[in-house]
Image 1 (cartoon, helix red, strand yellow):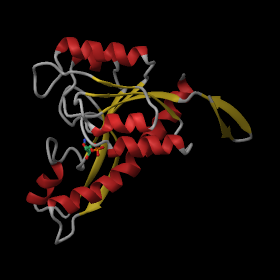
Image 2: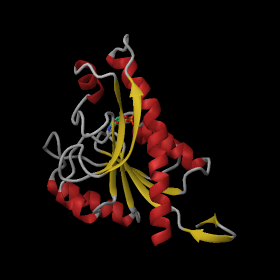
Image 3: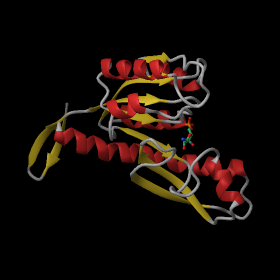
Image 4: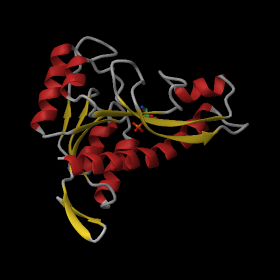
Length: 209
Ligand code: GRF
């Protein structure tokens, strides 16, 4: 629990238990965990799960002393085997997770997760959705000749990089940008946007529970 000033009252609010899923380097995960550690974000990281055995995001969880697990994904390339997805639901439930945060998780979630955590799964995507869903969205924006792109945090639904938008931030595309320089600048902005949207959800869910 933590205390929040509300006018001249102090109310007790619950820290929102979150689970983070990622397949890669975990820079967004780091940004979130740092904000929690500094007290800026009223969430409680319960579990980090990866479908990649040696993903740096798992090292990061260990660095921050957070429970973590490798989940062998099964025989499919872009989704989890249905039984594995059920297992993921059980793991997150056992850890008491109330908000699932996708941070570079490279598999599409299906019914077991979407049903168990309805409107409780969020994702960050490196474009101004609905523009450029899918892979390497910053490259798509460059190729399309855009002058502005950005990043979006959204609820996850059954479609890829779709679902209600919770927050967006723009990033200008500079004339000499390469895919690498643009992606790097988008990531800097992601690291501000994601914790800030999670902070809003912590307030919303903390008050209602
Ligand atoms: C981010 O660019 C995010 O937008 C996308 O995957 C990337 C994850 O990066 N969904 P990281 O692992 O958080 O560094």
